[in-house]
Length: 207
Image (cartoon, rainbow, N blue to C red; front, side):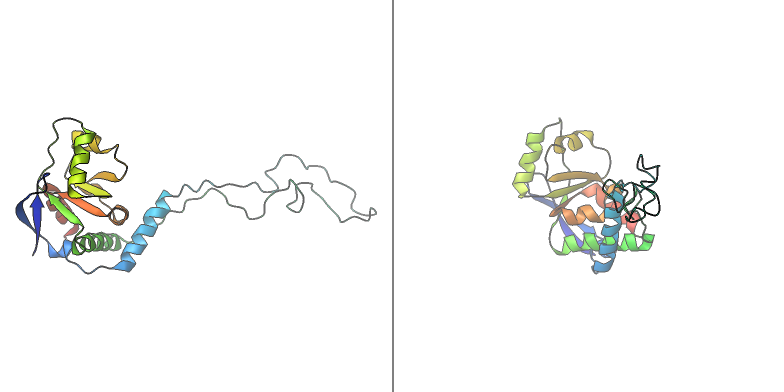
């Protein structure tokens, strides 16, 4: 088993916790991480780009000139893609870019990302984060005390006071244990786990 120190919000080590080697000590599979991040980014694409073809543009119902005898190239429609103001050929249309990767790959990628953070010593375990009132300034003081620049906080359940205290800090994100994902783990420099959330993460990933 792996052992990690548990700290309070004053940055004092108060205890230690055993971590599962299956979740936090696994080999890093970069291929799985790449596929899952690509999937997450594809889900975020809106896919609303749209162009008009020749049949979508208003006008152009009449043949511009007769077929023969003018000396000009034949033309049957003034909204041809060859003409100014004409339609677009093979332009983008609204579509979904979403795709899925197998559940086992998603699990492997998440385990790899957690293991990578632990090996790089960019994972901190907090025993608790008591907040009696919504206070962004107090939350920022804790961030400064640990020296975090970009931090992802993982909590075990709904904590409205803590979540609201952090939402105005641009380089901090608060997620619940069931919402932890590969993209966020890679995006933020440090991952801060509240101690109760570890058991939930291990329970979800160990089958």
